[in-house]
Image (tube, rainbow, N blue to C red; front, side, top):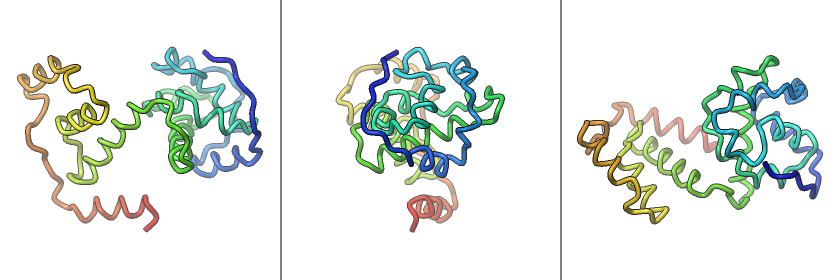
Amino acid sequence: MESITYGHVAPDFVDQVEMMSHANLSRCFHCLACSAGCPFCEDMDYLPNVIIRMVQFGMKEAVLKSSTIWLCVGCNTCSMECPNSVDMAAVMDSLRQIAVGEGIQIAETGIYSFHNAVVDSISRYGRTHKLEIMMRYKICEKEFFTDIDLGLKMLSKRKLDLLPSRVKDKKAIKSLFEMAEGK
């Protein structure tokens, strides 16, 4: 865990995050249930409850530049563990959206590359095509041959489809993406 560095304080940051996530961060009494339930907190620079506290203190830059918001996989364990129903997964998602929207340097670029590959696959096919996602990710990260043994094993066990399957109603998928982009 890193020590918290103070910088510019953004007092309206908590309001921005609460509005985007629909989470009431003042309900958090820092019981650590979210952090205790998180399967990835060992690798995070700040525990999830610390992120909430930093948001409350207006530490926008430190939060948006943290690895924590990118290491969260949105499994919702934290949200389910919270005795006060603070939707921490939605908070993390909102923080990622703010970071991208404000052009903040992404702390975990590989995760962002993978995310973009997944979203692109859903946009084109209406569902994920795992083989293509992994290929695009490997090309983007210039890690062409890492995990190739795992990929071949998955192909041999028919865990990866060579061709993508597509949803029938492509217009519905397109409208969802347009709605998300505010068009």
